[in-house]
Image (cartoon, rainbow over all chains, first blue to last red; front, side, top):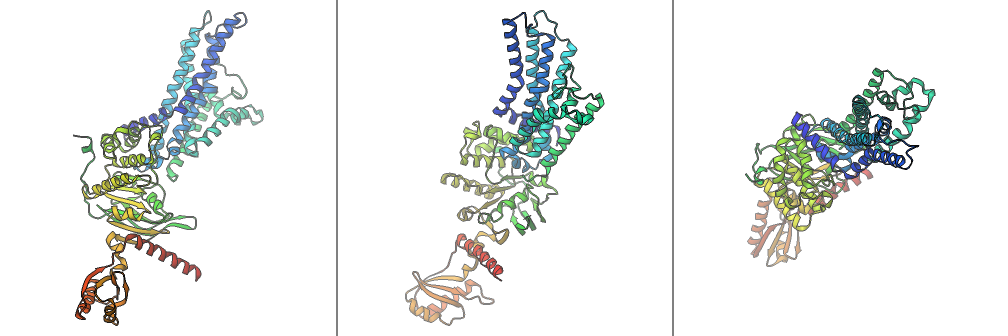
Length: 262
Length: 335
C-alpha cells in the first residue's frame, strides 16, 4: 500500500466518522460541554458572590479545566471516537465489501487509527481552545498560565486522549461489537481503573494502569486517589506503560481484523 | 470522454479458460460439511448460475472464493490466481455482492462508493460517475443510503462492483428486492456485460427461472455438493432428450407398431398423440432413434404430423436431481 492509497483510505475513514452524527455529537458534548459548564458556573458564582468566589478565569481555573478535559471527559470523547472507528465497518456490514477489494485486512485496520486520531485531535483542540478562551476572558486580575504551561497542557491533553483513542480502536476491533466495547471501556475508565488505582494493597502493580502512566505527564497537580496519581512512576516507566497499552491493543485489534470471518 | 466511457466495455484479458476453478474445495463447520469436495469450473466470458435451494452452501462457496472465510481443504483459483495465496491480485478485478448489499447508512450513495474506491486505488475514483449512471442512480447519488429502497441498494451494490472494472462479477441472490422492471433491467445489464463486454458473471440463486433467463452455464448444488454442471441447455435436457412427443392420425395403431421395437422403451397415449420414451441403444444417438421411430410409423402407413423431443425446463431438472439426492441420502441412512 503506497502513501496515496493510505491517505485516501484514511480520508475515507475520517469521512465515515465525520458523518456519524450521533457519536460525533456525544463526543463534542463530552469534550466541550464540561468546560463550558465549568466556566458558566464559575462566572455565575463570581457574579453573584464576588467576595466568596473569585473570577472564573486565571491559572487556577485553567488547571481545574485541564483536569476536566484531559483526565475525565476528554478520554470519554476519545473513547467513543475510537470505538466507532474500530467497529464502524463491521457494524454497518461493509467490512466484507472492503475485504473483497483485495486490500489487505491489516491495511484496513491500520487506516482506522490515524482517522480516529485526526477526529479526536480536532475535537480536543476545540475543547482546549474553549478552555483558553475562558481562562483569559474571565481572568480579571488573576494571573494567567504561562506559555509553557499552555503548551504542556495541550500536549498532556492530546497524549491522554489520543492514547485512549488508540486503545479504543484496538479493543473495539477486537470485540467487533460497538455496544460491548463502549460499555466495557467506559466501565474501565470510570469505575474499574480508579478503583484499582485506589487499592493500596496492589502496590507497584498499579504502575501498569493506563491512568497512572498518563497522570505522570500532567503539567498540573492531578491530586491523588482514583482519577489522580496514586503511584509515583519514573518518566521511562510511564512511557513504557503507555507504549505497552497502545502496542498490545493495536496488536489484538489487528489480529482479530486479519483472522475473523468477514 | 463521458463518465459512462470510464466503465470499460471490452475485456482486456484473454476471455478463454476458467474464471473460477476449484478442486476438492471443502468447508466444514464442526462435523458438518457446508461445502463438500467441490470441483467447479466457471468458463470465462460466461454468465454462470450457481443454483441451489436455501442452505445448499452457495453463500459459503462465494465467501471462500472471496477470501472472507478460509477453506477447510482443497484449492481454488480466481482469474488464474490461486486463492488465498494471491488473493489481492485475484480480487483486484473482481466485483462482488455477498448476501444483501450493505452500506454506511449515514453516507450518501456517492460517498459509499468513495469509501470503496479509496481501498481499490486512485484510478477507481474516476469510475464512480459512470458506475452510478450505469445503474441509474445518478440523480439519487447524493441522498443518504438510509433513504434508499432495497432495490436501490441492490443497484448501488452493482455500481460498487463496477468500480473494480471487473473481469469477474460474483453476485449472491442479486435480484432480491428488485421489482419486475428492475429484474428485467438487471437481466439486460448482465447479458450486456457478458455478451458485449466479455465479462464473466457468477450468480448464485435459488430462483431457477432467473438463472435460466440470465445464464448460459450453471451448476446445481445441494447440501454442499455439485450435482451437475455445464451449459444450461445440456443441464435442462438431461435424460429428457430420450423422450418424444409424436402427433399422428391413429395413436392406437401407432402403439401396436411401436410395441416390441428395439428403439422404444415405453410408449403411451397423451393429449398430443403419443409420448415415446426411447431406449438407449449403443452407437445410436437420440436423434437417430427418433428418426427410426418416425420411419417405422410412416412405413406402417401412419400420417405423422409432429415429432418433437420433450423440452424439459431447468426447474424440472433441478427438482429431479435435488430430490434424487434426497432419496439416496435417505436410503443410505436407512441402510
